[in-house]
Image 1 (cartoon, one colour):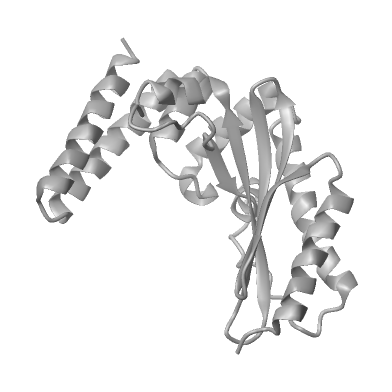
Image 2 (cartoon, rainbow, N blue to C red; image 1 turned 180 degrees about the vertical axis):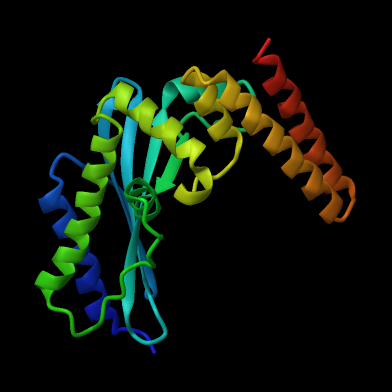
Length: 233
């Protein structure tokens, strides 16, 4: 069972308008709407070369209930510049350099278990939906206060904390995360991440079917690892 398209679009508009009202400093970057889900990215400039976005995702359940989830996405050109030395087959300069889940980060900060995304019934009033949306915004503000504010120093502090607590916070272990640690001066953390990254690549090699395509992929990944090691020299 799915929600009527007209009603679903109204929910999409309600979430978008509420976020804009609660967080007027964030501007809509992108948005999309389908019969089953929607996504809206709101962005804000932190400093020259650093953009922070709130990626709001909504989706329906089979029970005609629905929910929303929010991730913080960061594009720091200092990190992107490092990453560009590794990723040379395409232009990654405008791609997110670091991101994490808001509910997971808030739970880790509070020392609580991660709760599931809120379940929103069709019987919820508009004010009840607005409260759910506002609570996400409040959590984001608390997360930034934990990192000592919406500043460059706060961003670096928060990002390194999230990487150190990557399992709880939902941080992906990839090239961008490695470059984030190095760009923010965390060389020992970078070594730890690189070691884990190499172990993950080796496990992946063992599981994948060996053919020309996978061989080319792993040759490229191995080249990236060598470059990462060279960054520590």
